[in-house]
Image 1 (spheres, rainbow, N blue to C red):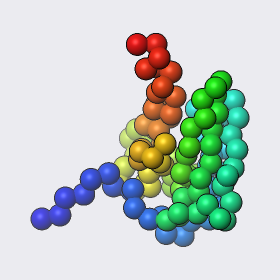
Image 2 (cartoon, rainbow, N blue to C red):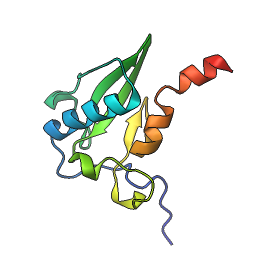
Image 3 (tube, rainbow, N blue to C red):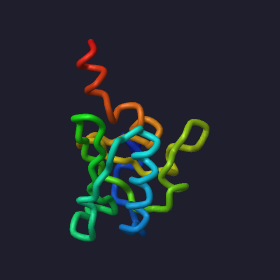
Length: 112
């Protein structure tokens, strides 16, 4: 018996920096970021993901973005989660839809 936890958290085959850069742009826009920047370069690739940062106010969050085409990374409700790689948000892996919900989670903690 095989138990799989967090499908899509492993290496991303066929990834490119160009796709990762386009994806972080879309993610930052959807997340309501004020700014994003690319530490992302060929030098920051790790298992098919590149390092970027998104910023909102005084928050700066590290995103490890998969380098597949957007429609192969942007998971939303109703699609099969087994078909999508995970993003890493400050080291924790999330499918796109859920990454959008947690990226600014420290705001919620401050309000509690």
